[in-house]
Image (cartoon, helix red, strand yellow):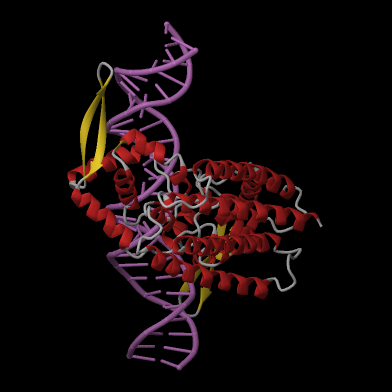
Length: 181
Length: 181
DNA sequence: TCGTCCATGTAAGAAGTTACATGATTGG
DNA sequence: CCAATCATGTAACTTCTTACATGGACGA
């Protein structure tokens, strides 16, 4: 994935919602947004530096306790413009749908009676079922009344993730049925 | 994605199906398997060299026409063992579900009445609908009688891709409905 | 002959992961 | 006081994409 440094725009988007520290940005990628993009802190901190050099963001320092200094970053007006341009620009649709080692493995298992199949499908099924449950809990927790006026995008991606996991578990179930008969 | 060089196993898997040239391997990633893994020839040729050095594959040269030499690669017994070990090993479930720039963009669009939303959703919808149709055509073409005994894995991943695209288009449709009311 | 596909490689650089490094805060 | 978490960075390495480079085969 060497493309157009999408990470920078996501950081701008997150900072537009509210000023954040590098640590908080890292956490954001571990929650909902992580369903569709992820990044480690080792990518985030350098990117923040670059964005600051490019005058897209600024930071001020917060002191907590005795000597801990936090850098809280916020968008500049330039950064806000960059973000809006990205949001308004055409989006290349996802090419393949990402990489899925499990799906590829299945591709190489030719016989429906392969002794490994049932266990593989069951194991993945358990994982995705659990994940689906977790996402559904998030949904009822965050949007008990369905789609909201605020945080609409958040609602959409959660819905997206749920549909994706639902489709995944249903596929695994159908595969299990197909290879058992 | 710096992990365990999964590409090498996929190449072994493809060569297990039948001996292939680097060019043919490249093509394979542009067809069905490309739905769940992709690679360019600039990754494939070097990987083939490494696999040959590691005695996982061998090649023989085919001459076609006047002077064109093709290298057709095949698995060694070692390579076959490596492949089987990979297939039998536990598979880490997909973490997030890959990266989806479009989904992330939506995340940052807070208001359901954002003037850009309808166009964005419609455009992506058209793309994924077309892709879905193409996949369904592939399915009826390759598996007119449904799941087959041979090529079962191929059937499974095609089914997977279809379900994924179906879920994607349904999500976009639901999103469109939600933001129009 | 001319364009399209076949065919194989290398190079440069971006993106992403893992590991290295360090230290503060907070709550039990 | 000790563990978990907060907090910020760098280094090394792998993976992946884009571009560079070259040439043959085949059909119109």
